[in-house]
Image 1 (cartoon, rainbow, N blue to C red):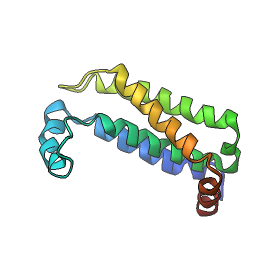
Image 2: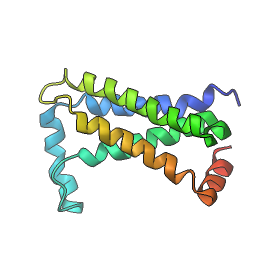
Image 3: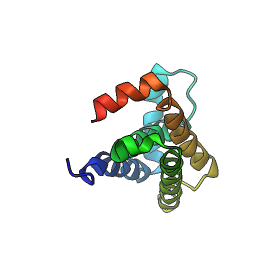
Length: 133
């Protein structure tokens, strides 16, 4: 497979993040009650940043393949996710009822860092590499 094609999942997921960031504050708040039926203690969507960037880090990891097993690329994945998080927050600041929040960028990077920690566990890495090759 062409090595650049392996980054299509990351680009697609970045598109999903961009689309979700395009929703106004009212649109986001209107779906919160639906999720609260399943998660009664949920008061907002801050957890969404963690999950979204955990997935983005996994997609970048897939793109880099076995090269992502090294510490330098693991750090690069976290940095790439953080940089995209910054652009996402800037974009979000132009959407009605939304604003830039540094805590969101922190949560983005935590999600990406957790992926790199999880994928560093030998049996997880072995299964992931087998699945992702």
